[in-house]
Image 1 (cartoon, rainbow, N blue to C red):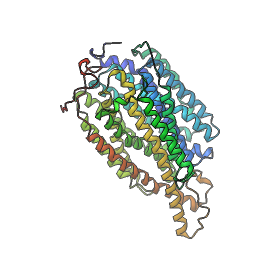
Image 2 (spheres, one colour):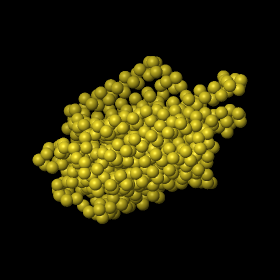
Image 3 (spheres, rainbow, N blue to C red):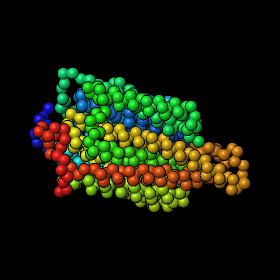
Image 4 (tube, helix red, strand yellow):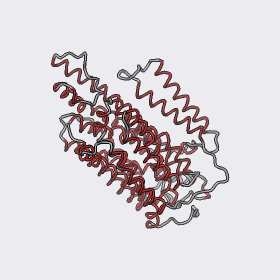
Length: 522
């Protein structure tokens, strides 16, 4: 391994190393987004419900969030190239099994495996970059990763829509990634060469990983299924048991993490103000990224009656905005060293976009929706990778995997929770609006659709129209919740210490684990 205090590799050298990694990331992200606009038809074909629609998304995000810290810790201990290859293989196998799904249960299980692979790829990509580049140069490469993700996000829904609308059918939205995955594995073997820090003794915190996964899963099941429109009431014994069980498991996780030699979540990192504020800022970003964008395709298709292809095209303003903001902000940060202003601007844009989307109804013109999601995309693009960059600037190279995965874990867990909770809110709001609409016409409300069925073809014409309008009007509610949460991001990034980005791969040996504490604005 090169000396961590030696000059960094040139841009050309780093770019050559990252070719296979970026292709693998593109393949995995494409495989995720390509099914976004196919989900309404998939759930309808498998006779699923709105709740199962949410869980197809939530399960992948939950597995992603729960596995991310483990991948990050493994990246600090083992060969990163091999780990990336394992992650893309898991993701590919899961995509194939999802394509053969004959029930929503089968599909959800396959999505869980996809989430594990995605957690590895997203965590490892940033760990690899952090291993070979100093923070002062890392922004341009982080921006490159963000741009690749944005391209996959923009092309995925469109390609997925075209596949669903073609004779191939929705199953090929899963199968199509296989050739790309094989190519990416070959490219990884040829181009990705990352040094590994060899240790005489390696300790993997399997107990901490198990407790963390169990606690996160239990709490997410609790918030997803409890409530007036859920499977049990908030105050029911089942609800109390799940809440208490999840809390106890997470408390045990913290206890274990304080005593194991190689914790999966190094708690010492959280004692730094920069890391703590970045983690807090990531929570609303996760809800905005996953929780709200998940339901855009549903809004366009179910409420506005657009085809899957059209739904993908209508989301292009947001995806292009993310790509531009991620690339430009990363490049400028690397050139000027000014990062805090970009985070503050991103937080303000994110909040503004979400607040504007809270006004969405089934009558909102498409151009207005496009402008609003573009504003949200600009904010997300400025925040996503740059929050990871700020955190990695605070830690030693031996902890970059765990530190980067910590932010990704919090962001993804927030997104998984957001998808589950906002899906419950959406379902309940749709039911209420349909019930009110039927009551206004004098129709009986005893057999009102619960708002959870996405198979609208079998509904009477009048009821179908009410349900479509209800989905459009209810969508604004979930954006409103996300907008309120995003105010926390504004506060958190404002409180971030404006520390300079270091120019060495590792912390200076005379400075311990803390970089210079002075604030700077160049």
